[in-house]
Image (cartoon, rainbow, N blue to C red):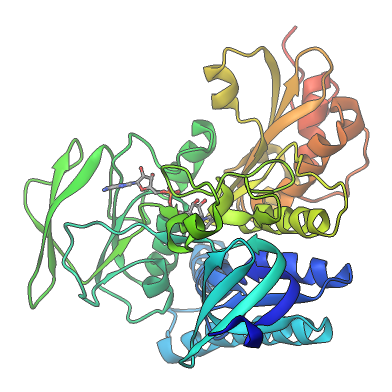
Amino acid sequence: MSDANAITCDVAVLGAGPGGYSAAFRAADLGLKTVLIERAPTLGGVCLNVGCIPSKTLLHAASLITEAQAFRAHGIDFGSPRIDLDQLRAHKDGVVGKLTHGLARMAKARKVEVVQGTGTFRDAHSFDIALTKGGTAAVRFEKAIVAAGSEAVSLPFLPKDDPRIVDSTGALALPQVPQRMLVIGGGIIGLEMATVYAALGSRIDIVEMLDGLMAGADRDLVRVWQKHNASRFNRIMLKTKVAGANAKRDAIHIRFEGEGAPEITEAYDLVLVSVGRVPNGRLIGAERAGIAVDARGFVTVDRQMRTNVRTIFAIGDIAGAPMLAHKAVHEGHVAAEAAAGKPSHFDARQIPSVAYTDPEIAWAGRSEDDLKADGATFGKAVFPWAASGRAIAMARDEGFTKLLFDADTHRIIGGGIVGVHAGDLISEIALAIEMGADAVDVGKTIHPHPTLSESIGMAAEVFEGVCTDLPPAKR
Ligand code: NAD
């Protein structure tokens, strides 16, 4: 396509995930003529369409099932759930649709032009677009923000094109409720999907090559999850790998090797591969624009999210770990503001992580295991939910809230929560870290009673030795 017909703009954003659309909307709000390039038919990227949002919809359904079952022991029996998979799938799709429609409306209201197609750099000031509907286009820009995300890692030794072997997108499509399901990879995606399918009635095996699940989370948090889930899953095989797979008519037959490997080959109706994601840095023609991409496929950026080409920015999964939507959004705002000439920088003190499992695990700031590995001196206080009236009232008192403090200033530098709603509770710890709050600030903040959030104030009181909701500290 000749340049005369090119769409021209101040800022072109490549990829409309949470990072990309946030960057585009912020740029438009700052008065820049903005084009948003996305190959999928809807905005929102992996997170909204085939990730965070559909998985949370299904996890909510899973929690209804498990909570109802658990309450049999306390006098309410709803009987066994009758699951209409078509209706559940339609509900999930409806949730996603509501949000994608909202985004399309917001793009229009901001006069952000959405180009539906796959963009690759032609040079440092233009993209070639292979339009999704067929044909090509070109977008010429003053500045660009690359938000092209990541894709699931696949395992080369697994049979190709077998619908019984899926990644997270395939698992979220809810093709069936398999009788026997294998989850390869005990990270957040694997454990969230295992939680969903276990509630729907599948017998789940999980295989993880490391010696623990959910790398990155403190082990004391994961231990509580593991104890609570001891009977939910058939088998959790640690320090174990898949050694071979054979797709037969009746099932996928898997051979394992390693410490937890069963002696015989196991048969599965569905296999989820959730062994991590890789950035899409090699798929965007970066070399034609002169953009540096590292060996792993990440685009290298500075604190303004600028690449080595000063007019091109990169944000989100493609710009570095952690691959989390909320990090991408903040980076997107910084990039848009920097593109508009503002002195914005990404200087977050913490990026929270949440596993929306049952119970949830959430952490922010420094983790205890990392601090120990660094040989750092730090303070720590724990409030066990066994002493929380609200957690006991909910019959969910297995969790705890942990705060980590700078040993000298008593400022909060990290924290972790395991328990129901941990993902919602962690924000207070995130704010405390960002604000430089210390134990007294948080302990003396009046928290409503009876709530799970009280446990954060009480953990701070524990650190100060003034908590009256626990037995007296030993002197
Ligand atoms: P992950 O890297 O978090 O976990 C993958 C796990 O698979 C690791 O524990 C790894 O040791 C294991 N593994 C790798 N190869 C293996 C093999 N051959 N056999 C057995 N185990 C193997 O990746 P993920 O869970 O796929 O998630 C991908 C990304 O998406 C992560 O960055 C994650 O943070 C993000 N994500 C976040 C959320 C959330 O915040 N709630 C939800 C989903 C995904």
